[in-house]
Length: 112
Image 1 (cartoon, rainbow, N blue to C red):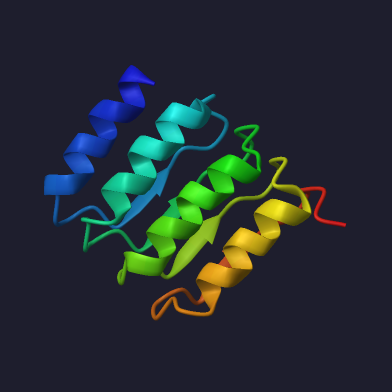
Image 2 (cartoon, rainbow, N blue to C red; image 1 turned 180 degrees about the vertical axis):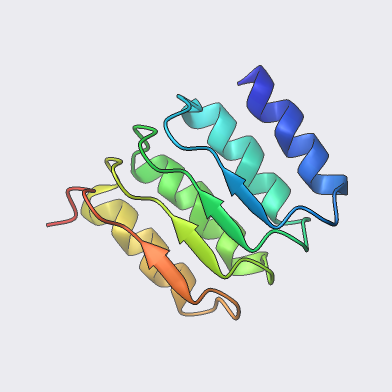
């Protein structure tokens, strides 16, 4: 989580990074919370990958909350996690108000 916190803090100030790939990083729930919080402030990131991080429905809620606020993300990759039906519901609710997202990957998430 310390590394994720550092990245999150940088994201809050950075205005040039457009792609962030955190694939299979074992970021953990605290790390996702930090990154999701940073997304509420960041205006340059257009693509985020959190694939294969063992994320569950609680982490999906954190990401969904960020998607409701963020206006720059056009693509998010959440595949190969454990979001389940509850996590999918959180993301789906955020999609109803998201104004920028055009691509979403949820493959292999036990959504049913």
